[in-house]
Image (tube, rainbow, N blue to C red):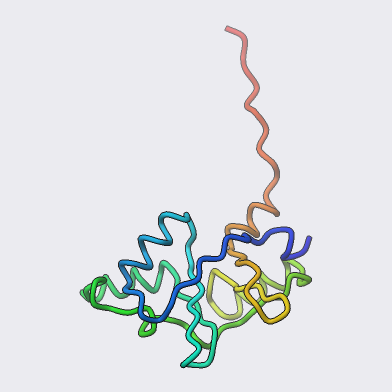
Length: 133
């Protein structure tokens, strides 16, 4: 199975001047665990994850005054839609992260997460058998 088959095509893109609270509100509303941060002044595309926000709040930082640019990962590993899920999982395990931005023609086309891969690899749930009373 390929990354294109597992990735979410819901790509939340924010700017570097979004506060962490604004990012969290948008991520929550879209039910995603990561946002692509587009910062043309700093060289392009980065990623802000729920873990980045959690770490900031855990340090006592104010999510209303902390900006995405200060918490964005800019040394990003990108996946191609044609990667296998094994390649994506290997990149995540090697890099110690849970999300990969998927690029097609140099633009974000989706995000694949560990959860997406697990959904593809896990056996489908079957309804529990009913025991007659």
